[in-house]
Amino acid sequence: MEEMMLRSTAFNDHTLMPSEYSHDRGDVSPPLEWSEPPEEVVELALACEDPDAPAGTFAHWLLAGIDPVTTGLEAGERPTGAVAGRNDYGTAGYGGPKPPAGDDPHRYFFRLYGLSEPSGLRAGFTAEDLRDALQEKVVAAGTLVGTFVR
Image 1 (cartoon, rainbow, N blue to C red):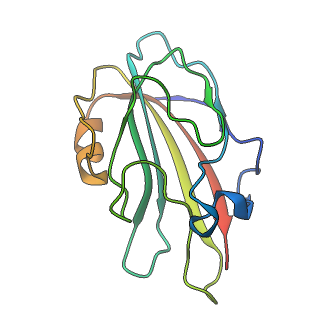
Image 2: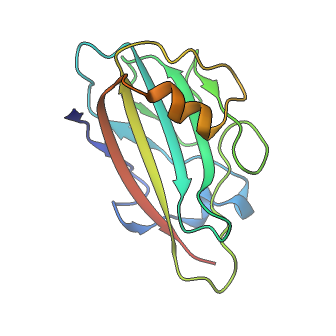
Image 3: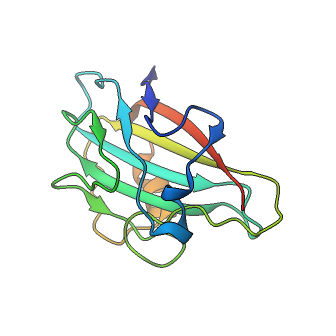
């Protein structure tokens, strides 16, 4: 599998995410940039999950159907043609960090996947649906980890 660079102009890998991208501040997704995927990629998918949530991994953002010519997203942007999954807040699109007050910092894994075949996902898909759709289709991937504490 080929590695893709994934980064943000708002925070560095394994550093604190600014509060403007939190659930308490309106759920604005952070800006992201990534390297051009390999030629065989026909679709990009993106997930942001918190494995430190009290009840287990919490899905904050699920996107599929991203055109592979796309190399980034502005803050709050959903790319044309992409479909949003249902996050664990129960809404479509991005739901920012909101770890329990007093917890140690939680980690938020932003993962970008380059797929060799279309995912077939439709609006409202779940994190489990995404995992199933990724089976044997991922040819490139990148990860960026942000942290957040309240």
